[in-house]
Image 1 (cartoon, one colour):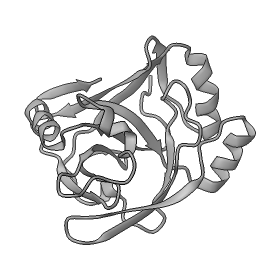
Image 2 (image 1 turned 180 degrees about the horizontal axis):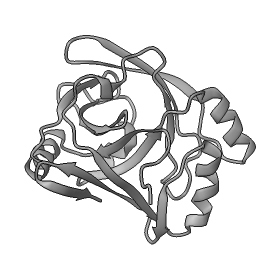
Image 3 (image 1 turned 90 degrees about the vertical axis):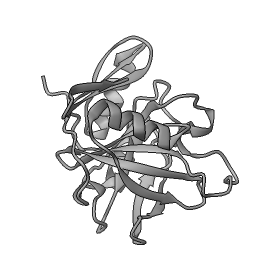
Image 4 (image 1 turned 180 degrees about the vertical axis):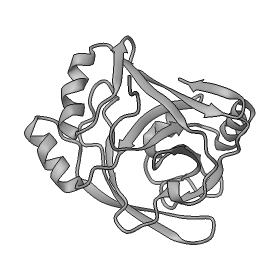
Length: 210
Protein backbone atom coordinates (compact mmCIF):
# COMPACT_ATOMS: atom_id res chain seq x y z
CA UNK A 1 0.00 0.00 0.00
CA UNK A 2 1.31 3.46 -0.94
CA UNK A 3 1.22 5.64 2.18
CA UNK A 4 2.72 8.79 0.63
CA UNK A 5 -0.12 11.20 -0.21
CA UNK A 6 -0.41 12.61 -3.72
CA UNK A 7 0.97 16.17 -4.10
CA UNK A 8 2.56 16.08 -0.64
CA UNK A 9 4.57 19.27 -0.12
CA UNK A 10 5.50 19.17 3.54
CA UNK A 11 4.62 18.00 7.05
CA UNK A 12 4.49 20.50 9.91
CA UNK A 13 5.96 19.44 13.25
CA UNK A 14 5.22 22.33 15.62
CA UNK A 15 6.95 22.82 18.95
CA UNK A 16 7.07 25.28 21.85
CA UNK A 17 10.89 24.97 21.90
CA UNK A 18 12.52 24.77 18.47
CA UNK A 19 16.09 24.23 19.70
CA UNK A 20 15.07 21.36 21.99
CA UNK A 21 12.98 19.64 19.32
CA UNK A 22 15.73 19.94 16.72
CA UNK A 23 18.20 18.42 19.21
CA UNK A 24 15.80 15.56 19.97
CA UNK A 25 15.22 14.95 16.25
CA UNK A 26 18.98 14.79 15.69
CA UNK A 27 19.40 12.39 18.64
CA UNK A 28 16.71 10.02 17.37
CA UNK A 29 17.56 10.08 13.67
CA UNK A 30 21.26 10.92 13.48
CA UNK A 31 20.38 13.81 11.13
CA UNK A 32 20.61 17.49 12.06
CA UNK A 33 17.82 19.65 10.54
CA UNK A 34 18.98 22.68 8.55
CA UNK A 35 17.98 26.23 9.52
CA UNK A 36 15.07 27.27 7.33
CA UNK A 37 14.33 30.90 8.06
CA UNK A 38 12.34 33.46 9.99
CA UNK A 39 8.66 34.33 9.57
CA UNK A 40 8.82 38.06 10.16
CA UNK A 41 5.83 39.41 12.07
CA UNK A 42 4.56 35.94 13.00
CA UNK A 43 7.07 35.28 15.78
CA UNK A 44 8.27 31.94 14.42
CA UNK A 45 11.21 30.35 12.66
CA UNK A 46 11.81 26.86 11.29
CA UNK A 47 14.30 24.12 10.55
CA UNK A 48 13.93 21.73 7.63
CA UNK A 49 14.69 18.16 6.59
CA UNK A 50 14.17 16.71 3.11
CA UNK A 51 11.75 13.78 2.83
CA UNK A 52 12.50 12.81 -0.77
CA UNK A 53 10.13 13.11 -3.71
CA UNK A 54 10.13 16.92 -3.55
CA UNK A 55 8.72 17.01 -0.01
CA UNK A 56 10.16 18.14 3.31
CA UNK A 57 9.57 18.23 7.06
CA UNK A 58 9.14 21.65 8.66
CA UNK A 59 9.97 21.88 12.37
CA UNK A 60 8.43 25.18 13.46
CA UNK A 61 8.56 27.00 16.77
CA UNK A 62 8.76 30.42 18.44
CA UNK A 63 11.61 32.69 17.38
CA UNK A 64 13.26 34.04 20.55
CA UNK A 65 14.87 36.84 18.54
CA UNK A 66 11.51 38.34 17.52
CA UNK A 67 9.20 40.30 19.74
CA UNK A 68 5.83 38.73 20.48
CA UNK A 69 3.49 39.02 17.47
CA UNK A 70 0.26 41.00 17.58
CA UNK A 71 -1.80 37.80 17.34
CA UNK A 72 -1.31 34.09 18.02
CA UNK A 73 1.66 32.38 16.40
CA UNK A 74 0.82 30.02 13.47
CA UNK A 75 -0.28 26.42 13.99
CA UNK A 76 -1.27 26.93 17.62
CA UNK A 77 2.36 27.01 18.74
CA UNK A 78 1.49 29.16 21.77
CA UNK A 79 -0.76 26.46 23.17
CA UNK A 80 1.65 23.52 22.84
CA UNK A 81 3.48 21.92 25.76
CA UNK A 82 5.42 19.48 23.57
CA UNK A 83 6.25 18.89 19.91
CA UNK A 84 3.32 17.70 17.83
CA UNK A 85 2.61 16.91 14.19
CA UNK A 86 0.02 19.59 13.49
CA UNK A 87 -0.84 19.39 9.81
CA UNK A 88 0.44 18.82 6.30
CA UNK A 89 0.44 20.69 3.02
CA UNK A 90 -0.13 19.73 -0.59
CA UNK A 91 1.00 21.58 -3.68
CA UNK A 92 -1.60 21.18 -6.46
CA UNK A 93 -0.77 22.20 -10.02
CA UNK A 94 -3.33 25.05 -9.84
CA UNK A 95 -4.05 26.27 -6.32
CA UNK A 96 -6.85 28.65 -7.33
CA UNK A 97 -8.69 26.01 -9.36
CA UNK A 98 -8.33 23.49 -6.53
CA UNK A 99 -9.81 25.97 -4.03
CA UNK A 100 -12.77 26.56 -6.34
CA UNK A 101 -13.31 22.82 -6.86
CA UNK A 102 -13.25 21.88 -3.19
CA UNK A 103 -15.63 24.74 -2.33
CA UNK A 104 -18.14 23.27 -4.78
CA UNK A 105 -17.87 20.06 -2.73
CA UNK A 106 -18.79 21.95 0.44
CA UNK A 107 -15.41 22.52 2.06
CA UNK A 108 -13.76 25.93 2.38
CA UNK A 109 -9.94 25.73 2.58
CA UNK A 110 -9.76 29.50 3.05
CA UNK A 111 -8.55 32.30 0.83
CA UNK A 112 -5.16 32.18 -0.87
CA UNK A 113 -2.76 34.71 0.64
CA UNK A 114 0.84 35.79 0.24
CA UNK A 115 3.52 34.59 2.66
CA UNK A 116 7.28 34.95 2.94
CA UNK A 117 10.27 34.18 5.14
CA UNK A 118 13.88 35.28 5.17
CA UNK A 119 16.39 32.47 4.57
CA UNK A 120 19.65 32.38 6.57
CA UNK A 121 21.52 33.72 3.52
CA UNK A 122 19.22 36.74 3.45
CA UNK A 123 17.16 35.63 0.45
CA UNK A 124 13.46 36.43 0.69
CA UNK A 125 11.41 33.34 -0.10
CA UNK A 126 7.81 34.04 -1.19
CA UNK A 127 4.85 31.73 -1.71
CA UNK A 128 1.05 31.56 -1.59
CA UNK A 129 -1.08 29.38 0.65
CA UNK A 130 -4.62 28.90 1.88
CA UNK A 131 -5.29 30.58 5.20
CA UNK A 132 -7.32 27.80 6.75
CA UNK A 133 -10.91 28.94 6.21
CA UNK A 134 -13.11 26.74 8.35
CA UNK A 135 -10.78 23.92 9.45
CA UNK A 136 -12.15 20.40 9.13
CA UNK A 137 -13.11 19.07 12.59
CA UNK A 138 -10.60 16.23 12.28
CA UNK A 139 -7.67 18.59 11.68
CA UNK A 140 -6.36 16.15 9.06
CA UNK A 141 -7.24 18.05 5.88
CA UNK A 142 -4.11 19.68 4.41
CA UNK A 143 -3.68 23.30 3.51
CA UNK A 144 -2.65 24.22 -0.04
CA UNK A 145 0.60 25.89 -1.07
CA UNK A 146 1.95 27.34 -4.30
CA UNK A 147 5.67 28.11 -4.63
CA UNK A 148 5.33 29.61 -8.13
CA UNK A 149 8.83 30.59 -9.31
CA UNK A 150 10.51 30.29 -5.91
CA UNK A 151 13.15 27.64 -5.30
CA UNK A 152 11.35 24.89 -3.41
CA UNK A 153 12.80 24.24 0.07
CA UNK A 154 13.39 20.57 -0.80
CA UNK A 155 15.73 21.71 -3.60
CA UNK A 156 18.05 23.65 -1.29
CA UNK A 157 20.47 20.85 -0.28
CA UNK A 158 18.58 19.83 2.84
CA UNK A 159 19.71 16.89 4.96
CA UNK A 160 17.63 13.89 3.90
CA UNK A 161 15.50 11.40 5.85
CA UNK A 162 13.28 9.70 3.24
CA UNK A 163 9.62 9.47 4.21
CA UNK A 164 8.52 5.84 4.49
CA UNK A 165 4.88 6.50 5.39
CA UNK A 166 2.42 9.13 6.55
CA UNK A 167 -0.79 7.88 8.12
CA UNK A 168 -3.49 9.22 10.41
CA UNK A 169 -6.44 8.31 12.59
CA UNK A 170 -9.80 10.08 12.91
CA UNK A 171 -12.98 9.44 14.90
CA UNK A 172 -14.87 9.07 11.61
CA UNK A 173 -12.49 8.55 8.65
CA UNK A 174 -15.41 8.67 6.18
CA UNK A 175 -15.91 12.36 7.01
CA UNK A 176 -12.37 13.12 5.91
CA UNK A 177 -11.91 10.99 2.78
CA UNK A 178 -14.37 12.87 0.49
CA UNK A 179 -12.63 16.17 1.24
CA UNK A 180 -9.22 14.67 0.48
CA UNK A 181 -10.59 13.26 -2.77
CA UNK A 182 -11.92 16.68 -3.79
CA UNK A 183 -8.47 18.13 -3.10
CA UNK A 184 -6.91 15.52 -5.38
CA UNK A 185 -4.95 13.76 -2.65
CA UNK A 186 -5.30 10.88 -0.21
CA UNK A 187 -4.19 9.73 3.22
CA UNK A 188 -4.32 6.35 4.90
CA UNK A 189 -6.71 6.95 7.80
CA UNK A 190 -7.73 4.51 10.52
CA UNK A 191 -10.34 4.94 13.23
CA UNK A 192 -9.26 6.56 16.49
CA UNK A 193 -8.46 9.93 18.05
CA UNK A 194 -7.46 12.51 15.43
CA UNK A 195 -3.71 12.46 14.91
CA UNK A 196 -0.81 11.79 12.56
CA UNK A 197 2.04 9.31 12.42
CA UNK A 198 4.98 9.44 10.04
CA UNK A 199 8.03 7.21 9.71
CA UNK A 200 11.41 8.27 8.36
CA UNK A 201 14.31 6.21 6.99
CA UNK A 202 17.31 7.44 8.97
CA UNK A 203 20.93 6.45 9.70
CA UNK A 204 19.59 5.07 12.99
CA UNK A 205 16.97 2.95 11.19
CA UNK A 206 13.26 3.69 10.78
CA UNK A 207 12.03 6.32 13.26
CA UNK A 208 8.35 7.06 13.84
CA UNK A 209 6.94 10.38 15.02
CA UNK A 210 3.35 10.65 16.29
